[in-house]
Image (cartoon, rainbow, N blue to C red; front, side, top):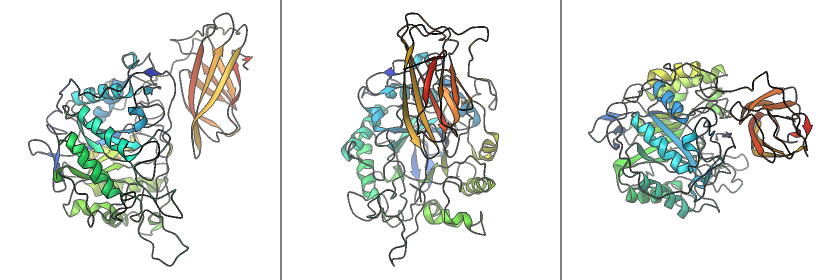
Length: 537
């Protein structure tokens, strides 16, 4: 009944900028072909472009703007254009971009941009970075779908609003974005709110419902309010409306005699949309969206069916597939993914892709995710943010419709990989910081089975430390996943961060912040920080 996930992130070099609420100067049009020409609309269950030609979105999620980092993840690992080049070369014609309302606030800072790899992003606001991604993706014939993933960067919410982000802010931010991109058909629409659900509201069951009529909980009614407001600001956009988890807004339970309703994944239950459809002022702009995940993400009862995986199409028909089969409206499968480490998950993915169909008349989809740092699914690329997971790609490939102008990846091969980590020269001999150091350890994010942390080390001595190396201890059972702003390695319960070649010196009075993600418990926090062997206070 839920999708349990954690979008782990990075926190490093802060970039500052104010949100500007103006239209883009660019009026770039998506290239004719893979994703059509001009803005998109619907005819029954089919997307069409401005000429009436059929279009299918076969995309991918690139997350990060919804987290504390407030911009795309992986900008600490390689140039931002390289990511998009590789996505296009692999055949993904659309990028679904999750964001939180925090990233749209005036003064919001993107804090995970490596200035060495991405000097042209330094000093830009989250929205300005998004503008650059939109323009470049459009030049490759790709489309962008914006996804309001979280009301704040703190996490997802059962309802579309929280105290810090009321419904009025949600709608006004959507209208701002709709106007901001009004002259750029690369941006095709608004996925209004990610994964409305019931979990966390028991025992009262006050989560998002569908068709219950309560204006404070009925997601269908909220989607109408927001969708029509967005269309007033930009009548060309698609309005993407996800399902709920349980139509009543409460989870199934065992303490009463009332028959339990069918519940599905967060955002994945559109079983009531036929009876209670979303009513927009422009009916040909409505797209429904469902999320679908594998057994390894959460164990649903249908994975135990002896007829698995052949039982799955009937389940998908019930929850969302009927909307396409009855030609009511298109269904975008906006998230689906797995590490594929469980053989059952491979069967699930193969069955799902076949169910969605091939060619331009198949269901639209955006795979979760590009990012390797999705805790329960991993990504299309590995931890180096380059090497393609060929097991996943080979299953998806027959269903992908590449963007026209997609070209090749930065290495000329879709599966090519080169290392992006840099190690300090072996010939350098680290010096001990005269005067010592101070250190601060912060747990930036935590989820079941892992966490993200940052270690800030300040050289309090009178001279530079060149090259610098920081170490710290972690509890037994903690294993390193990734690191940034240094070459981070692990030996036993010690993490070592070696200075990158482009910033080997830590000046007197200067600080460096090393970020990392790890599997295992976040408490007790990392401790015993040292700079070139000297203990920090």
